[in-house]
Length: 283
Length: 325
Image 1: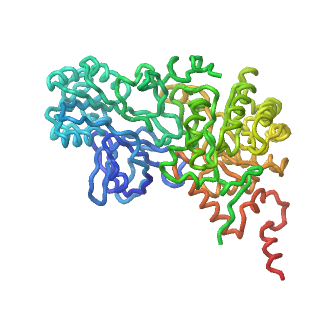
Image 2: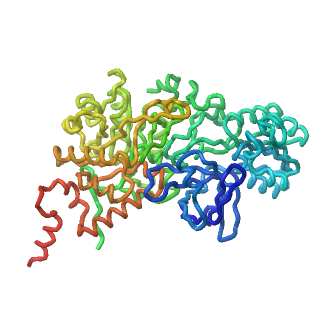
Image 3: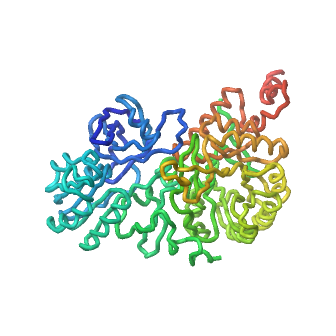
């Protein structure tokens, strides 16, 4: 649904921006993993595509608020970063397929890199409400780029931090710390949100331990609602066939082992309808 | 006093002139989450191809000033799955559906028409002529009147007489009027224009083209003047041919420009990416603009900007005649 939300507060979280927006309809329907798309640039803007943003927090005050987290990457997100309290924002959401939650109170490791970590906090809330044990592994290039370390420490049984420059926690990547965290916590499942390369490595680790892994991908999108077909990636379906599926409509959450990470950005030769593939000569 | 927004695409009546542009409404279900599709004049499907198509690699999209480039490559499930799942879903709901088709050879277009000829729920057939012609070194059909006419003639001969065939034209031609005329002579009942002109953007960080496919179709408000010009030229040359004006329509005022240039229906594309409710909003705004200018019928405004300088708008003349006893 489309909502004209009013910005309630703005804040900086480490190297990132966070906007709390009053958006009752979206807050009500939200489940962890959902995202929203935001129109940027105001009514006479030259920017025609929406920006997909992850939801970091949902509260029921003021009829329902959502907190959106983003980093400035271009003119659109720079405009968003300039929003102040009482400005209005055009939001569409909640969009996408949320994280599936385990039925039983199992042990979950939540892995986040950079601001991808943002979506893991509402997920952690939901898991804790089901009696799951939650452990965090959060990372980034430097200390100021590790999102939500404080909050993770308050929520989780253990929180492991990694930075590539060694300025906070362990020096290295989240995937360097992940195997020992999985082993120590005797984890039953992994949830991750991070850039594609990190998700690929997280999935490899989880598969080594033979535990399920759910990943939320960050693909660039134009519409967020499934009509523009620009956010596709190769994913293996239940029937074993690879299809180019939309990160916004079929995702953004996928089972890690189903995503063909090494082929993202290409059309694998065996994908359904690939050029030169067997399916081409149906007629 | 409400404005009569009905319009005719050849002999097919549409409740209002707003349609989705081909490829911008996917299978229809995505938009149905937001509003009742019956409120559209018609829904135009993505271009359906014979075989399933995986499309182009990503990145497929790049935002440009007042527009965007796309190179999706007609990703779609192919005609079998379309007839099995997507078309029946629309037909069962009684949604007016313009089916867009795309092919690489005249034979492929003909085969698609054959499959669709007996399918229930096809309100009109739109032939996407901006597909590379495999038999002509991959140059698109829309580039040349004779290649376009060959496709249209074949499709027209196969489709049932009561299903209008619409030729979708590209603006990347020296003379759009000659291509339009060739299509009409070959039997096209209506014309839709414009398809995306080709554009390109370069990523100045990566120092390479922004799109994996290098070039892509430019859409959005940047191309509205191009669409208005094409509709104007073709309406001036072929005033009796129904035109669907498509290209960069974001507001009712944009749609009104195309109507005044000669379009009797208006396709909304990129605006849907920005605002899922764009079609309803644009229809409302267009009706409002017509009402404010004293129009009782949309049909009175079609092509009105072509009237000679100094003459009053037709609809106002009619008004005064009626008021005289």
